Image 1: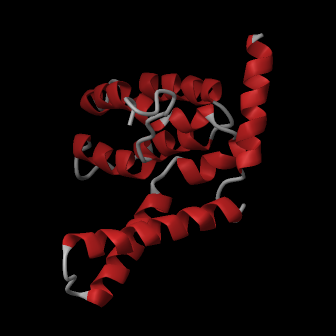
Image 2: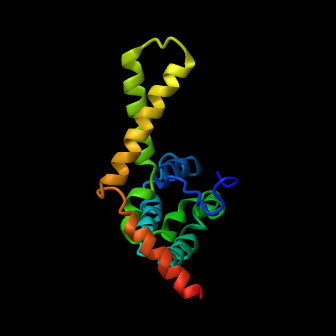
Length: 160
């Protein structure tokens, strides 16, 4: 993606990130370690999240050093959504939109069961993707792109 879309930000799903973090905790850990880490994703901006992350690291470094080291080296991939308008944070910090699209593709291709050839399968998937994309563009429920355009204009104004 970065070769074609140079400015594209990589956003790792925070839900999957937190699930992966469980691999670095003892099975019987019953404290608030992961809950406090999850709260970082509810902050208003990256500065606030970074401040809380530093406090989280300080608090848990002694008890769970492997977890803290893993979080420090991987959490950056999950904070890219802070570069976008605040109204988009809720939808872009996880991969729910993409997972829903994949479920719909699976559901619709299962109905056909057997495709005559690869091209016919790809045509159906492409049509589903186009349909979903149009829905996302028309439906402000997910992402209001006007907010993104305003943010870009503001960034250009500040850079000048």
